[in-house]
Image (cartoon, rainbow, N blue to C red; front, side, top):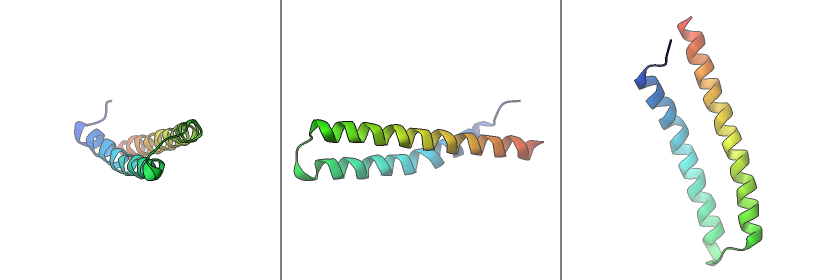
Length: 71
């Protein structure tokens, strides 16, 4: 059985807003001095991978709890 569109929209919103705010804060931090170094790009890339894993885990938890509540 698939997930309802409203539930999926709620999950996407719950994940997208905090992620967008996190990305914006990271952008402001990197651009604070007006230039970007290779070290900053590498560091931000690693942080982005970590954040992507967090988001993936959060979405999986939400989906699991949604499926459990339907049972």
